[in-house]
Length: 76
Image 1: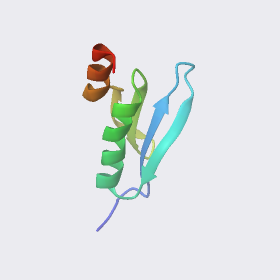
Image 2: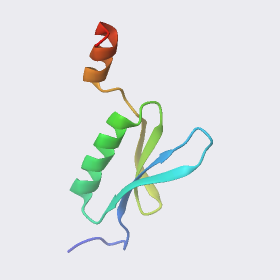
Image 3: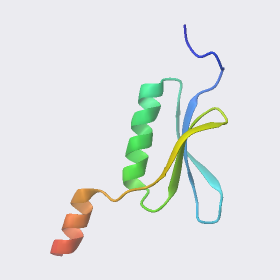
């Protein structure tokens, strides 16, 4: 069993200038997916792709954590 394609799952981000910056890489898809979900929480407004080798599996723009928004609104 294992990967049919010899590649890791990769999480990176795309800067406003269009450069790709590496965030995480794993041979385990569950670990890489968790890193991707966490990267979306901490990279507000940045494009974060989730790849398997060169293939982009999904890509989203980073989201704001709810607790951070609540703190900003309340002035804490």
